[in-house]
Length: 493
Ligand code: SIN
Image (cartoon, rainbow, N blue to C red; front, top):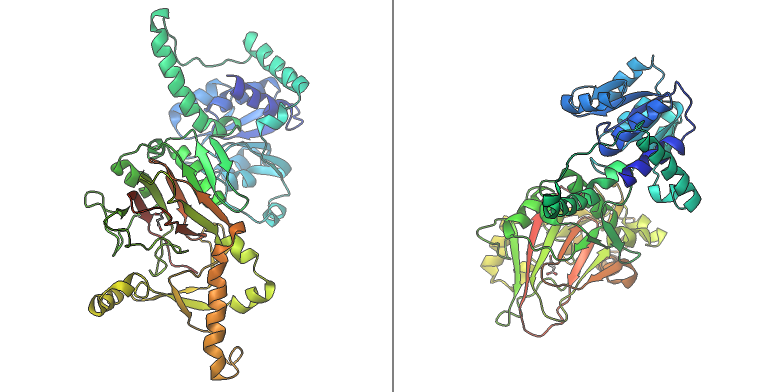
């Protein structure tokens, strides 16, 4: 109760100066924090409009003090709030749902009211232009963390004092979901441990504390995530949404000790989208979409990954991302590196940005994987996968960021040879080639990189639009076995 109670305490006693008669919109009103907040709000004389996802939850929320309930699966939240408040809107919105309710929250708050984003159980709120606040009645927006409201021991004691006072006197009821006899102590411990694990993951939506431990690895990109089992994220929407959010933010995320089956690996990756096989690297026949990147002492030279690349940019729709698991690795060596190509673009000199703004380039499987094939086989490969053309600066499909998008698969610019750039025919090829070489070399700048050391059952998940990677071949002939689920992406623009 303590975390949820303290979160409820600061939401009711610190974040806004509530007056009796004020109205609040409380999302997830039947959740752990919601039930405490609803009761506390009634003690302050507030009108509470709660949102829930089902009739059963509506009943529970009403019992704990909600005056009105909106079932967000069937009703339009903002429209209903305007009806209930004579068109004025609520003083404060407490939103622990995030992505799915953020817009409705802005549309439900009164002029110059307050929207409190206190969690993201449906997924992170996408980036938005602050200008929108000016169009929605100039609300204030805050994303608080409990830690900042209890950092001062005196303030923490005061909040805890109020909370325990209300609970001890019965003014606020804390639900007890399970009671155990003394003889069931061992079972109680097991259940408690399990609940604690689940709670760590879902607590952010309820009480604003960290969902899982995320440690940033460099200033450029990459974060290691602990306290999470990927197998749980196959069915746990909240956990998956948090991982997806971390991926978009850090561009590559790493996890250790993921002892998952191949079926679980595929099922987890499928949450991001459909998977695809690779025309040259073989897949696991029992698990389509799971590409085997196996190096053995017998096949040490069959190497492609030790070049800076984004996967499958030779496709019209290159991969959105990949989930790579280490099955076996050398005791030392065989690390993989990633480079942040958003940063690589951002740091380009302005005159280069201007020069490449409208350029397009070709990406070829023929000139890379096909190069070692006999000519007939190479041409057959090219016929099946004709060269793709992509903008040299692409836009991230979800974040809108600009990305430098050339790599080892890029053969040439397709629209360089214009009168503005080429005075004499002789200018064209060296000019284009030098510029392309320069752009491709940006991924090699260490300030844009992170390097990951593998152990069996380590997993890397990367955003293939925004990064390039390089598998370092610095180990003697030995086994290095990696399995990669590649997620189909969209056509770059
Ligand atoms: C890849 O290039 O997708 C594989 C990277 C690796 O084997 O570390």
